[in-house]
Length: 285
Image 1 (tube, helix red, strand yellow):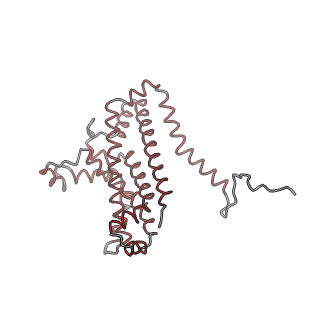
Image 2: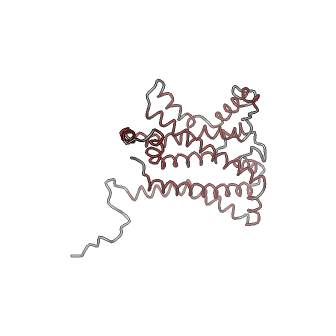
Image 3: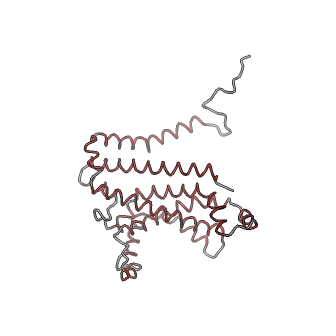
């Protein structure tokens, strides 16, 4: 009888759910069609520029300004969403109050609302003569047609990513953990920062990454409130559209490639921090 070697590595492992080969094939097919081929096409068109033209496009002052505004506002909005999204998820999980289901449903409103409609609504509210802007203008605070307006628009579209990522993990945390911490003499702040938040770090980082990625590529809700002024409130996606309308496809693909590289690098850093926090703290209690 042939001896069985338990150390031999096998690609197909036994599973309760059959169809591993078909599932893997469909996954790779969809991944290739929807992600790998478009990204490869972008990289191929960018490579046709050559390093001299590519660097000239990448370091053009207008391109650098648009990239700085896009990534800066997306990062600021993701930070705000990470903070207020955790608070909102905590309220929805830990408390009962009238209208809770309505508020819970409103969290998903940015998913269903067309981004252009959201941008028009925000511009109407925060314009100098808008419902909210008319009270801020005498104070010297201008929101619409500034980077601050872009941050507000990105907070609106990115908040559900944080709430829906943190909420199910928070529901798994037993209240007994908080009670045990209080019994051992921990204050409320110590319970929050030393007992609850470490276990919520991985989902918070996941929501942050999703909100950041959505904010970097957001277009519809931003163009109406940004003002689209070069070197002041012009975002990189709008600059790409402008280049396409000018039939300057080389510049458009070059800017898109720069955005892709920066986005990939930042998301890689976030994922590394997320993996470290998951190994250190875990998801639960």
